[in-house]
Image (cartoon, rainbow, N blue to C red; front, side, top):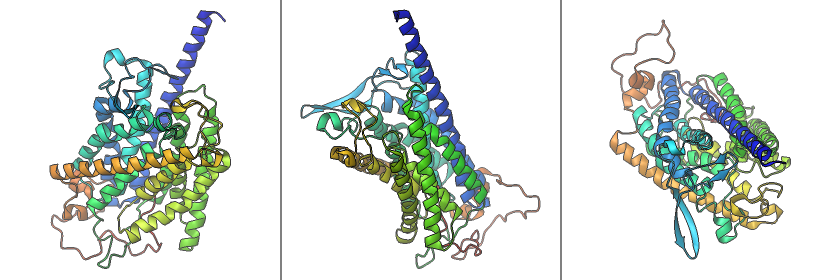
Length: 485
């Protein structure tokens, strides 16, 4: 083959890879619609516009925060060559030298995408990584619904998107020290997270947990003895449709993480994603029927999302039976975790973000240390050979997964708490008592989400409520009532 033909073939492959990455980024962007529908379906009518506004605005404000600072911190240290072509201008990582080893901390290039760096390869990388960041930061909105001030949410999201998320993302995907656990200490291929069980889902789950503690439960959620009261969803069909949209977008989330349309492994990744989602939904239905007496449609959705969150880290490296097993375990785990969080920890998580993304995201990280079968991942993170888990002879891979998970809990939990406290001092997180009772649509946005000409105008003053929130309906008889995300 002549040099010109070889060059043209390389350009064609690069163009195809960029096209694949951008298209999958669009799929991941569409997941924002799924999140918005799931979350809005779970709130009461008086909070639907506020919930939709948060889901819409988090995408917008975090895009600017990530462009301004986050992308440079996360990906500024990535190598100069990739499946997307030359990442000209990147490859500048701040490292510390300790014990004869280099440890990457954060990137030093790519802030505001300067003109000399703004190539098609860098643009595709920016777009795809941005969509992942937006996914992580939309998760806490679900846990803090119906009592989180709009501007507090906006400030919090911008700070997390600019600083907290990008640093952990750098350590895993940008060539940082967690990715270097293999080359530095012989722990498998380092912390491996193919598409984000730790970087995206565990991060969102940890932030949700911290926020749920700080904001406290919705008015009327728990009685004087600490027993949970039902606050039913206002639109279950919206929840189901939103879940399907999320499952559809997840193919871009997982298969797109090859960032190479020429990598045929994407078909295996897509099928593993499909299998985990299906087994999660089936076990969510079966186990909810066992626990509650009847299959719960919201638990089917919960189980599907839990299976997806869990398989995301390992989807490229495992066999089909492992994908089914990961989804099935997640379908059971998410039910028990949600019950424990609500009944034992007494945390109010309207859509189950902590159980789906936090608990099952953590399980997905551990699964990456167990199930990789040695058929993919050759040379990943600079380590020769394919990725193997404990069941296939590499105990170091499990140790790297545990370290990566522990680092996430410490970093995201610690810095998330600091950001929450800072924003609370700045603008206050919790909506005013009367505003929460009236509904955040009117009190924060000045409009109703659903207009009904027959509605009686809300009074300007509200009486002191009884222990039960006026929005609470006694007609709901299911055992657990704050279920999906």
